[in-house]
Image 1 (cartoon, rainbow, N blue to C red):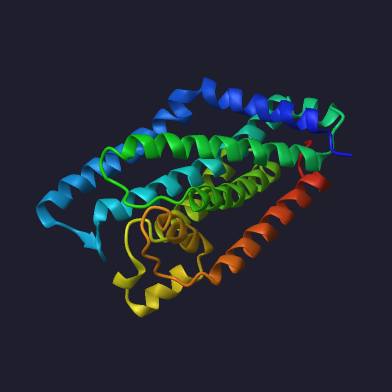
Image 2: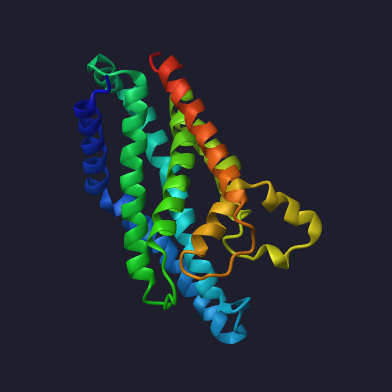
Length: 253
Protein backbone atom coordinates (compact mmCIF):
# COMPACT_ATOMS: atom_id res chain seq x y z
CA UNK A 1 0.00 0.00 0.00
CA UNK A 2 1.28 3.45 -0.94
CA UNK A 3 2.37 5.58 2.01
CA UNK A 4 0.49 8.75 1.06
CA UNK A 5 1.43 10.59 4.26
CA UNK A 6 5.17 10.06 3.72
CA UNK A 7 4.90 11.13 0.08
CA UNK A 8 3.07 14.32 1.04
CA UNK A 9 5.69 15.01 3.71
CA UNK A 10 8.47 14.95 1.10
CA UNK A 11 6.35 17.05 -1.26
CA UNK A 12 5.81 19.70 1.42
CA UNK A 13 9.51 19.66 2.29
CA UNK A 14 10.55 20.29 -1.33
CA UNK A 15 7.91 22.98 -1.87
CA UNK A 16 9.02 24.76 1.30
CA UNK A 17 12.62 24.51 0.08
CA UNK A 18 11.58 26.02 -3.26
CA UNK A 19 9.69 28.93 -1.69
CA UNK A 20 12.46 29.63 0.84
CA UNK A 21 14.98 30.02 -1.97
CA UNK A 22 12.63 32.23 -4.02
CA UNK A 23 15.42 34.60 -5.07
CA UNK A 24 17.03 31.72 -6.96
CA UNK A 25 14.05 29.52 -7.83
CA UNK A 26 11.49 32.19 -8.80
CA UNK A 27 13.15 35.57 -9.33
CA UNK A 28 16.09 34.16 -11.30
CA UNK A 29 14.03 32.47 -14.05
CA UNK A 30 11.56 35.37 -14.13
CA UNK A 31 14.31 37.97 -14.63
CA UNK A 32 15.85 35.78 -17.33
CA UNK A 33 12.56 35.65 -19.24
CA UNK A 34 11.99 39.38 -18.78
CA UNK A 35 15.39 40.12 -20.29
CA UNK A 36 14.59 37.95 -23.31
CA UNK A 37 11.25 39.69 -23.80
CA UNK A 38 12.66 43.21 -23.36
CA UNK A 39 15.52 42.57 -25.80
CA UNK A 40 13.32 41.03 -28.48
CA UNK A 41 10.58 43.63 -27.93
CA UNK A 42 13.16 46.34 -28.64
CA UNK A 43 14.30 44.55 -31.79
CA UNK A 44 10.68 44.01 -32.83
CA UNK A 45 10.02 47.78 -32.74
CA UNK A 46 12.54 48.32 -35.52
CA UNK A 47 11.92 45.25 -37.66
CA UNK A 48 8.25 44.35 -36.94
CA UNK A 49 8.94 40.63 -36.78
CA UNK A 50 6.03 38.21 -37.02
CA UNK A 51 5.35 34.49 -37.19
CA UNK A 52 2.27 33.79 -39.25
CA UNK A 53 -0.60 35.93 -38.01
CA UNK A 54 0.93 36.82 -34.63
CA UNK A 55 3.84 39.03 -33.62
CA UNK A 56 7.19 37.49 -32.74
CA UNK A 57 6.79 38.44 -29.06
CA UNK A 58 3.42 36.67 -28.93
CA UNK A 59 5.14 33.65 -30.49
CA UNK A 60 8.13 33.85 -28.14
CA UNK A 61 6.56 34.20 -24.69
CA UNK A 62 4.79 30.79 -24.48
CA UNK A 63 8.04 29.12 -25.58
CA UNK A 64 10.02 30.99 -22.93
CA UNK A 65 7.58 29.88 -20.23
CA UNK A 66 7.95 26.23 -21.22
CA UNK A 67 11.73 26.56 -21.56
CA UNK A 68 12.21 27.98 -18.07
CA UNK A 69 9.87 25.38 -16.55
CA UNK A 70 11.77 22.62 -18.34
CA UNK A 71 15.16 23.88 -17.14
CA UNK A 72 13.96 24.21 -13.55
CA UNK A 73 12.30 20.79 -13.69
CA UNK A 74 15.66 19.29 -14.56
CA UNK A 75 17.77 21.37 -12.18
CA UNK A 76 15.65 21.12 -9.03
CA UNK A 77 15.38 17.35 -8.53
CA UNK A 78 18.88 16.60 -9.79
CA UNK A 79 20.46 19.25 -7.55
CA UNK A 80 18.32 18.24 -4.57
CA UNK A 81 19.25 14.56 -4.86
CA UNK A 82 22.96 15.20 -5.42
CA UNK A 83 23.09 17.60 -2.48
CA UNK A 84 21.19 15.18 -0.24
CA UNK A 85 23.56 12.36 -1.16
CA UNK A 86 26.63 14.49 -0.47
CA UNK A 87 25.52 15.64 2.98
CA UNK A 88 23.99 12.26 3.84
CA UNK A 89 20.41 13.44 4.38
CA UNK A 90 19.11 11.11 1.69
CA UNK A 91 19.61 8.30 4.18
CA UNK A 92 16.72 9.76 6.19
CA UNK A 93 14.39 9.16 3.25
CA UNK A 94 15.65 5.59 2.89
CA UNK A 95 15.07 4.89 6.58
CA UNK A 96 11.51 6.18 6.39
CA UNK A 97 8.67 3.66 5.92
CA UNK A 98 8.34 4.15 2.17
CA UNK A 99 9.81 2.55 -0.93
CA UNK A 100 12.28 4.13 -3.31
CA UNK A 101 9.55 4.30 -5.95
CA UNK A 102 7.42 6.32 -3.53
CA UNK A 103 10.36 8.69 -3.08
CA UNK A 104 10.46 9.06 -6.85
CA UNK A 105 6.71 9.79 -6.96
CA UNK A 106 7.17 12.43 -4.25
CA UNK A 107 9.92 14.17 -6.23
CA UNK A 108 7.86 14.21 -9.41
CA UNK A 109 4.68 15.41 -7.66
CA UNK A 110 6.51 18.21 -5.87
CA UNK A 111 8.14 19.28 -9.12
CA UNK A 112 4.76 19.38 -10.87
CA UNK A 113 3.48 21.80 -8.25
CA UNK A 114 6.69 23.86 -8.38
CA UNK A 115 6.74 23.97 -12.17
CA UNK A 116 3.09 24.97 -12.49
CA UNK A 117 3.53 27.69 -9.87
CA UNK A 118 6.56 29.05 -11.72
CA UNK A 119 4.65 29.02 -15.01
CA UNK A 120 1.64 30.84 -13.55
CA UNK A 121 3.88 33.57 -12.08
CA UNK A 122 5.59 34.01 -15.46
CA UNK A 123 2.27 34.18 -17.32
CA UNK A 124 0.96 36.85 -14.95
CA UNK A 125 4.08 39.02 -15.29
CA UNK A 126 4.71 38.49 -19.00
CA UNK A 127 1.07 39.07 -19.96
CA UNK A 128 1.93 42.77 -19.52
CA UNK A 129 3.73 42.62 -22.87
CA UNK A 130 1.02 40.85 -24.90
CA UNK A 131 -2.71 40.17 -24.97
CA UNK A 132 -3.81 36.58 -25.32
CA UNK A 133 -6.85 36.30 -27.60
CA UNK A 134 -7.49 32.70 -26.58
CA UNK A 135 -6.74 30.57 -23.56
CA UNK A 136 -7.26 26.85 -22.93
CA UNK A 137 -6.86 25.94 -19.26
CA UNK A 138 -6.74 22.23 -20.03
CA UNK A 139 -3.98 22.56 -22.65
CA UNK A 140 -2.04 24.93 -20.41
CA UNK A 141 -1.85 22.54 -17.47
CA UNK A 142 -1.72 19.32 -19.49
CA UNK A 143 1.29 20.19 -21.63
CA UNK A 144 3.14 21.87 -18.80
CA UNK A 145 2.64 18.73 -16.72
CA UNK A 146 4.10 16.62 -19.55
CA UNK A 147 7.12 18.93 -19.72
CA UNK A 148 7.65 18.74 -15.97
CA UNK A 149 7.33 14.94 -15.84
CA UNK A 150 9.75 14.57 -18.75
CA UNK A 151 12.51 16.82 -17.44
CA UNK A 152 12.09 15.98 -13.74
CA UNK A 153 12.38 12.29 -14.64
CA UNK A 154 15.62 12.96 -16.51
CA UNK A 155 16.84 15.20 -13.69
CA UNK A 156 16.06 12.53 -11.12
CA UNK A 157 18.01 9.94 -13.10
CA UNK A 158 20.98 12.29 -13.38
CA UNK A 159 20.80 12.96 -9.64
CA UNK A 160 20.73 9.25 -8.85
CA UNK A 161 23.62 8.39 -11.13
CA UNK A 162 25.80 11.32 -10.08
CA UNK A 163 27.82 12.28 -7.02
CA UNK A 164 29.44 15.39 -8.42
CA UNK A 165 27.95 18.69 -9.57
CA UNK A 166 30.00 18.73 -12.76
CA UNK A 167 28.07 15.69 -14.01
CA UNK A 168 24.81 17.58 -13.67
CA UNK A 169 26.32 20.63 -15.38
CA UNK A 170 27.61 18.49 -18.24
CA UNK A 171 24.19 16.96 -18.89
CA UNK A 172 22.55 20.38 -18.64
CA UNK A 173 25.01 22.03 -21.05
CA UNK A 174 25.26 19.26 -23.64
CA UNK A 175 21.76 17.78 -23.50
CA UNK A 176 19.14 19.99 -21.82
CA UNK A 177 20.24 23.32 -23.33
CA UNK A 178 20.44 22.00 -26.93
CA UNK A 179 16.98 20.45 -26.55
CA UNK A 180 15.65 23.79 -25.32
CA UNK A 181 17.15 25.86 -28.11
CA UNK A 182 16.39 23.35 -30.90
CA UNK A 183 12.71 23.06 -30.04
CA UNK A 184 11.12 26.00 -31.82
CA UNK A 185 11.18 28.36 -28.85
CA UNK A 186 12.80 31.18 -30.82
CA UNK A 187 11.76 30.28 -34.37
CA UNK A 188 9.07 28.58 -36.41
CA UNK A 189 9.81 25.26 -38.06
CA UNK A 190 8.51 26.72 -41.32
CA UNK A 191 11.46 29.12 -41.40
CA UNK A 192 14.02 26.28 -41.46
CA UNK A 193 15.44 24.44 -44.48
CA UNK A 194 14.26 20.86 -44.91
CA UNK A 195 17.48 19.26 -43.62
CA UNK A 196 17.19 21.15 -40.30
CA UNK A 197 13.45 20.51 -39.93
CA UNK A 198 14.27 16.85 -39.36
CA UNK A 199 16.04 17.75 -36.09
CA UNK A 200 12.90 19.36 -34.71
CA UNK A 201 10.58 16.64 -35.98
CA UNK A 202 12.51 14.06 -33.95
CA UNK A 203 12.57 16.25 -30.86
CA UNK A 204 9.50 15.44 -28.70
CA UNK A 205 10.00 18.68 -26.82
CA UNK A 206 9.22 20.61 -30.03
CA UNK A 207 5.73 19.13 -30.14
CA UNK A 208 5.06 20.00 -26.51
CA UNK A 209 6.08 23.64 -27.02
CA UNK A 210 3.93 23.89 -30.14
CA UNK A 211 0.92 22.36 -28.43
CA UNK A 212 1.44 24.61 -25.41
CA UNK A 213 1.61 27.65 -27.68
CA UNK A 214 -1.79 26.59 -29.01
CA UNK A 215 -3.12 27.15 -25.49
CA UNK A 216 -2.89 30.87 -26.27
CA UNK A 217 -3.21 30.99 -30.05
CA UNK A 218 -5.05 28.54 -32.30
CA UNK A 219 -2.32 28.15 -34.92
CA UNK A 220 -0.84 24.65 -34.75
CA UNK A 221 2.02 23.80 -37.12
CA UNK A 222 1.60 20.06 -36.53
CA UNK A 223 -1.09 17.40 -36.49
CA UNK A 224 -2.53 16.35 -33.16
CA UNK A 225 -2.10 12.63 -33.79
CA UNK A 226 1.51 13.19 -32.67
CA UNK A 227 0.06 13.95 -29.24
CA UNK A 228 -0.22 10.27 -28.35
CA UNK A 229 3.35 9.53 -29.50
CA UNK A 230 4.70 12.33 -27.31
CA UNK A 231 2.65 11.12 -24.34
CA UNK A 232 3.89 7.55 -24.85
CA UNK A 233 7.51 8.69 -25.07
CA UNK A 234 7.28 10.69 -21.84
CA UNK A 235 5.50 7.80 -20.12
CA UNK A 236 8.39 5.48 -21.05
CA UNK A 237 10.93 7.98 -19.66
CA UNK A 238 8.86 8.19 -16.47
CA UNK A 239 8.78 4.38 -16.09
CA UNK A 240 12.54 4.08 -16.69
CA UNK A 241 13.21 6.74 -14.06
CA UNK A 242 10.92 5.01 -11.58
CA UNK A 243 12.72 1.73 -12.21
CA UNK A 244 16.11 3.33 -11.51
CA UNK A 245 14.74 4.70 -8.25
CA UNK A 246 13.31 1.30 -7.40
CA UNK A 247 16.61 -0.46 -8.09
CA UNK A 248 18.47 2.18 -6.11
CA UNK A 249 21.43 2.72 -8.40
CA UNK A 250 24.05 4.90 -6.71
CA UNK A 251 21.67 5.97 -3.94
CA UNK A 252 24.21 5.03 -1.30
CA UNK A 253 27.91 5.39 -1.91
